[in-house]
Length: 219
Image 1: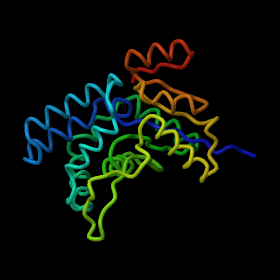
Image 2 (image 1 turned 180 degrees about the horizontal axis):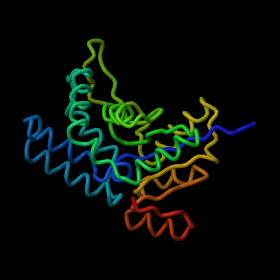
Image 3 (image 1 turned 45 degrees about the horizontal axis):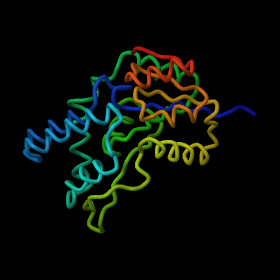
Image 4 (image 1 turned 45 degrees about the vertical axis):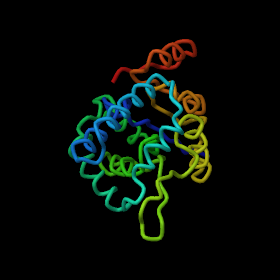
């Protein structure tokens, strides 16, 4: 019996050449939705995130609380337009090639990201991926955000739990699947697949990849 195989991809600094959270923060600043102080805080969070030295759940809770009361549909549409204008063209050339290669092999193309479901859906639509696993946000009966997120946070071990549940439902064999990422924060998920692929990695992930003999790609 043939195995069903997936290729999972991180978004920021993997498929994309940038961290899109910073682009979104700039968008929010220019739109008057956050202050200069809040923008500086996001920049700091992004730096600490890249260095894997942040309490990500605490930072995420603070960030999503800012959107309490916003209409889910409105934020989704705003994100879709922002993604098309500011983000989509920043896909790495190597990412385009690799997506095409996996597609030709019949693999499921899955975005696995700590970004919002709004951005994940925009990326899936833009690049014709098959599915996504990301962070989503509950609403009240009027469709307004509660300012919280649906657990587990799609980060670190949370990515593994989400990927395992997704793979089990679809009879995908993780032992014969791929995951592409740039960050040490994704080390648990890289170990959960049979074919980890490290893309332009941060220094600590590069050292770990060399020690474990994982392929290091420069897109």
